[in-house]
Structures are given as C-alpha cells and as structure tokens.
Image (cartoon, rainbow over all chains, first blue to last red; front, side, top):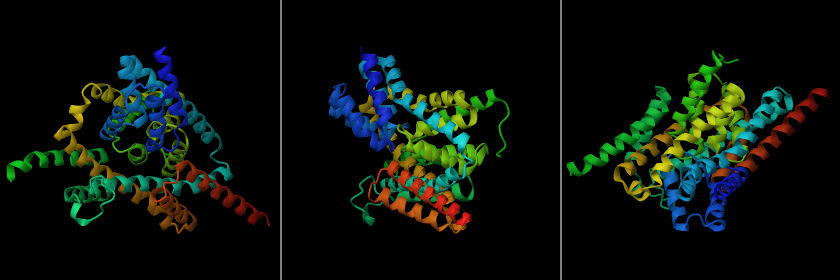
Length: 191
Length: 192
C-alpha cells in the first residue's frame, strides 16, 4: 500500500526533524533514497536545488516532489499530510499550554530569556542569506573581487526603504527580483 | 491587549489569505515567514504583541517540523483556536504543494532558466534586507533597556549557532534554563 507507506515515512520526517530545514535534510534522504528507493541520489540533489529556488519548507517540498513521482497528486497530498500532522498536534498543544500558563512568573522568566535567543537565531539565518547573496553562495572565498555589487546595492536600498519608509517587505523583495531580471536582460544590449 | 479583530469568520479569511500569501514568498527558509508574519500581525494589524510573537516563534522553533508551518500553526491557534490552525496550515502548505507538483514535471528546464535565476538572485538580496531590518528592530530592545543578561544570551546564541552550528533546540533549552535560574534567584532574593 504505497499511500500508507508515503504517509508513514513523511510522518516520521515531520515528527523527528528538529531545528528547521537543514536539520531535516539527512532525515529526508534516509527515508526517500536509502530506505525506500523512491528517488535516486541525483534526483535528491535536484530536489534540494529546487527547494532553494522555490518558496516553502524543504520537508513539504520533498513530500510533494516524491509523492507526485511515486503516486501522482493523491501521493503528494498524503505525503504532505503526514509531514505536517505531527506539527499540527504538538504545536497546538504547546500553544494551549502557553495560553493557559503564560502569566506564571516562572514561565514569564523563562520566556524572557528565550526572546533574545530567538532574535539571535533569526540573525544567524539572516547572515547566512546575506553572505550567500553578496558572494554568490561561495562561502570560502570572501574577497572583494567576487562581491556581487548589484546585490549589495539592492540590499542597501531595500534596507533604507524598510527601516525609514516602512515599505511592505514583499513589495521590496519582488522589486529586487524584477530589477535583477531587467538588468540581466538589458545587459547584453548595452555592451 | 492588542485591538482584537471583529468577527471570527472574517479573521479566518484574513488568516488564510495572509498565510497563503506569505508562504508564497518564503524564499530562503523558515525565518523569512517568521519575519513576514511578525510584520503582518504585529506591525500592520496589531493583533499580536511583539513580545508574545517572540514567545510564539520560540515555541514554533523548539517543536519538530518545518518552522514556517509551525509558525503558521501557532499564529493560527493564537488568533482563532483549532479552526485557525487548520486554516493557516492549509494556507502555508498550498503554495509549495502547487508549485512543486507543477515543477516536478519539467524541473531541469526550470532550474536552468536565465530569468528564473535572475529573479531569485535579486530576491535573495531583498530577503537579506528584510531579515536584517527585523533583527535591527528586535535586537535593539535589550540594548535600549540595558538588559545585560539578554544581550549576553543574544550574543552567545548567535556565536554558537552561526560559527559552531550548535542545534537550535539545544540553544533554546539552554536559554530556558538561564531564565528559570534567574527567576528562582530573584524570588529567593525577595523572600530573604
């Protein structure tokens, strides 16, 4: 029964991947490549590439990609359902506990210490994206010669509009993308 | 109390559309949707307070599964209970589900397309700016309040996570422990 297998595999991925995207990758690989041979190693690399190029969490992307290949759209749906079900249950329970006990002084004190940790985690993810944007993903070669000057300009202009003018962030992101497309298409015409 | 929304059905519709729309723009990992959720529900709609949003993110982060999905679930629960959870999960999952099932047919062509590549290259710089802006807003608070323990936790977590790849769940647990010790310490001080 392929649907049940897909569901159970992605249920495990959803239940045991702590710490977000990159932590989930080895778990996904083990389930879909090593254990079940649903896709090849090369296809898994393609999947990671596509995940980086499209919105959405890698686990959900993997569920759709593998599910579609193995059992069409119903396969994609059961795999995705398996992948998000553990989150739905656990996070809802934690949210209930938070709503009930958040006024307790001990929990307040604990959460107060968690807030700066969360900001640090977001900063860490942001710095990785920033460096990958400025240096083209090549993290080893931080030299001034391979800086993507256009990326630095987009970043600086975007930051100005976000901080000083409070422009909608999605508009900012979209304009950066559209500008880079325009520049890429026009460049051959100018030189 | 933040100004709480009007009718439940309207909140559900708003929740669904927001998670759908934000999820479609979550390039570059779960933290992007977290910053976008904050922008939408804290800064624009004022349905959630900033401190509470950080608590919700901490819960989303320390639970297994994708941060983007967990973040949508917890915001959904906070605003509308169980129906909110269902609506926001569907909203968060739908964009990648649709896109990936389309792309998995002809993905070679998609990955090598010059326009797609340029669009993503440009957007990545924008994503970096969005995250930087949010970190500047939220990171300034402990400095303004001269809260040295928070500054220390922030700096230590950043170094351990970025340079030493320490798992986020461990860091969350360590920060929680510091919080518990500090609270107990303060209570003992009061009694004595």
